[in-house]
Amino acid sequence: MTRILVADDHPLFREALSGALEPYFENAQIIQAGSLDDALAKLNEFDGVELILLDLNMPGGEYFNGLITLREQYPNIPIGVVSGSDTVEVVAQVMSLGAQGFIPKVSQTREIAQAIVDIIGGKKWLPEGMEEELDKVDEELKVLLQRFRELTPKQIQVLSYLRAGLMNKQIAHEMNVTEATIKAHISAILRKLEINTRTQAVLLMDKLQLS
Image (tube, rainbow, N blue to C red; front, top):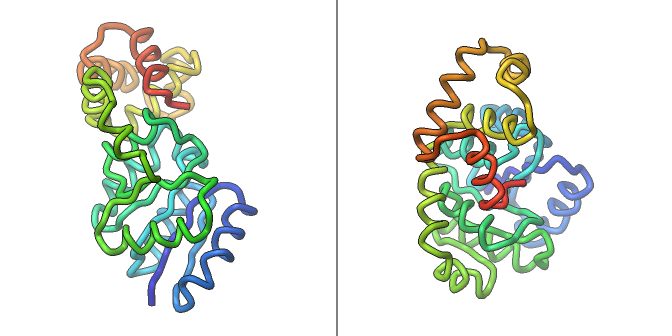
């Protein structure tokens, strides 16, 4: 039996996508999750999941944290990102971080079904014409993507709080750690991104169109 995990925080979208896929995968079990924690729990509960269809901005998964976390903890399960943010910068980042495909939310059901077949079969899948667009991504952005890929999920979480304007003490409170831990994370972030200030980190996130 094919098992597919649909991870999206909008119940209506999850249910609609699951229902739309059923005629294409009659013997498949489609499992639903509404947050990153829920997705991790479902993956722990169900063996043999062959594909994760992942929304980028569900709770716990913001700033690519969901993709990075799932890639780290379940490296052998392919991930197809399903998102409404389909700029070339976002797609480049998604593929750089190890997704096997990017599926725009506006895709027709038969396209999504084909993407699922391709990804489970070991192929990469992108919307028509997107591969050519990725080839045009400038070298500076490619370097930024490679540096960003070195960040851990915790560091990306800290980065998201920095972008929201929180101070170290506030971030420490939100993450339930010491202020010294946050300072260590920030130092590591600046080193990995090869920048010098918090402001530069925020500007870099803007350049990558992280939302």
